[in-house]
Image (cartoon, rainbow, N blue to C red; front, side, top):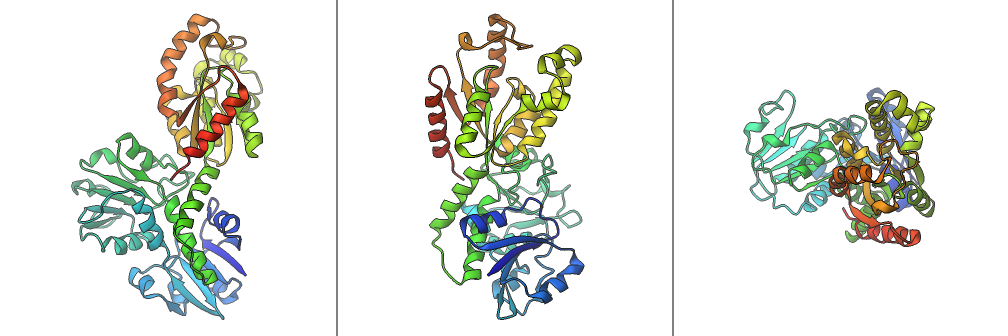
Length: 409
């Protein structure tokens, strides 16, 4: 049996990974222009497929039957081929409800802004009818738009647009600081794992979740339709935690010579992941050593190159990354780090830090002052803090144990 996901542009979709790796079914991605949809349906090559942006509404005329729920929503994201006839369903509604539950926020009678007016927006509005009649759809040209939406005293914001998705991950559809009583944010985007919208919410101490829970839950429901079976909901939790743990980069921060590169390289080998060192990449990019960059081009030049290199690394998943000691000084870098990474702050006593070939830390007094400035940033970013003053293997084992314990959605 063969399955797929269809959409206009699918370079970073995780659906094939979920279905192939966790459900063990033959599942691929198919990128189609709108004028190719007719031929795709006529070929009947697949036993079932998921549908994503921008075709959740477009596919409906090609279907032989549509579930009443999908018809009422006006969007289909799962299609099953039954003896040559296409049956359409909406499993996004199950996924979205699962994702919203993870926020632990009561939806009853809340005022909700749904950003976007496409198929996923329609799903969200249909679901929210069970809880509240105060739902406002925000669109570029609608009655409620991105200029006047701040006039609504929103309790919850749900983003159903692709704004904030990689590679445009520095964008956010709204400014959360303009909402005075916001209680929760849900973003259906899952790449990066923490979008700018989610990170902005976290900064404001507002509960926020990415769309990975929705993706996994709807995938489980779609798989059950594909294979005509029933999966216990507890399996969703297991797949979700495993997937998020597998996707997150493990990124090391800490003072120069605290052991970041050494431990990261060993850990990468243990986990069968790619090891990346930002300093080594900078030297490769510039074709000269870092001390020479500081000497000939200055620190500002180095920091700009460092940010450029970091952007390229953290947009990916499943890496083990060692960073330079000062990478945390720029707010832009700190935001980049939090998008897809589990952060390990590696601590080592000042007396154990080397000053050899370190352009900014040439003596102990300088190191002490440097640590005073940097320590708050290391601690702010850290998911875990690890002491690396004695046994290397013990430090690595502690990282693995804490990473396991801290892997949750």
